[in-house]
Length: 491
Image 1 (tube, one colour):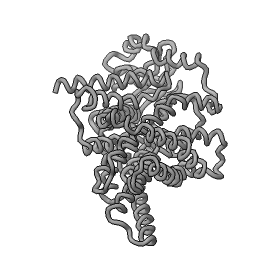
Image 2 (cartoon, rainbow, N blue to C red):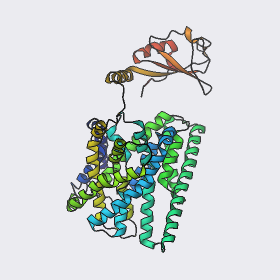
Image 3 (cartoon, rainbow, N blue to C red):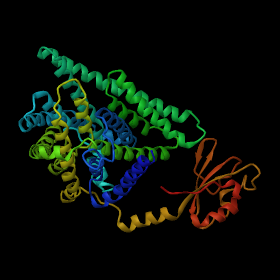
Image 4 (cartoon, one colour):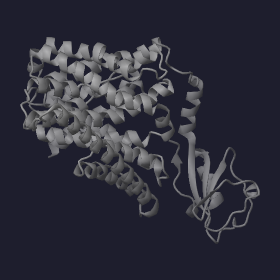
């Protein structure tokens, strides 16, 4: 156990370090963990035991749930309203177009039967915006491009999983006549999406309601509360034969756009959990890879990767955004920003574990496409955005440096005014605060008051004071040490 925990700690430390370095260098750091998995697994140093495909699939599902939930929490409804038409079109029409093209190419290059070709075509048609934004970092890309890529990534996974299920059912049971097949597809799609939307909305509303109504003893439990609703939204939709991933995304969007107690700690918790699951998922998936098998399909794999980049994705983007006001350069960027992440690998694992006949070549092929496309696109996506002039103006480096300096020195002090305090009934203007110190809020009876000079303090008031950390001793003397809480640095 000690050896395993030491190994896990090194992997997580590598993830933290590479996230920072990768953002600066523009390198797709997440894909590097596939290499770590290959090195540690049976095909490398034999440090890690072989992880069964079923376990890898389960880890992938849980990771995708938590990654989707974190993305939805940061998505304002105003941004969804502005791009929902192109995003939904990309997530439906775009996935269908890309799947059809990649099905034909997979059949031609890998000599696979129709159903395996179709399953592989669907798998490599799902994009992963998390990989895109781990590379772009805080780059000031045009807002509507960021929005459409984020919303697309949250809604195209359910479509890809739906098509995977349809093809697996078709290959096992068949649909009979064309009319019966069409009704089955339409009915299943409607059920999946409607149930996913309904369960997601209910779970998100109940989650935000529980967050507001349940008074927990410690703030650290609020992220656990939201985590429980993230998992239950997927489980509820799946049990009702709906799209669990759509339910997770909708629930997180609903919760993120409603009032949340301890919002900052919730956001930071899920952000860290999302990164951790990215790392774990890519390492586990890397354990399934074999360099020898990849080498055996080098040429077909390169053909699949190039086809996905320069044929399938551009065709899908161009057709699904017709008449929506996007310029040629914006369409070029959206096409190139369609990185393949871990979703295609999880989709193929789902197909392999089904009763249908699924050649093992599919797993190697999809790994090759994901690795090749992520490396090629990841290393060129930022220069492409600069060349196409898609970056908006941003604050100067000097201003950003001032913000960094402020974060080093500025602290927020929570201060409580007890009944015996000699400051009760005193006006704010009468309190001798240190220089460059501001009381910016008073919490009184669960209400927020913006103080003015004439505002009088009352017993039980909670003050939020912004000051320089060098003034902490002065504030403790002014308000007495017992009334001053621990200072917190600005985020």
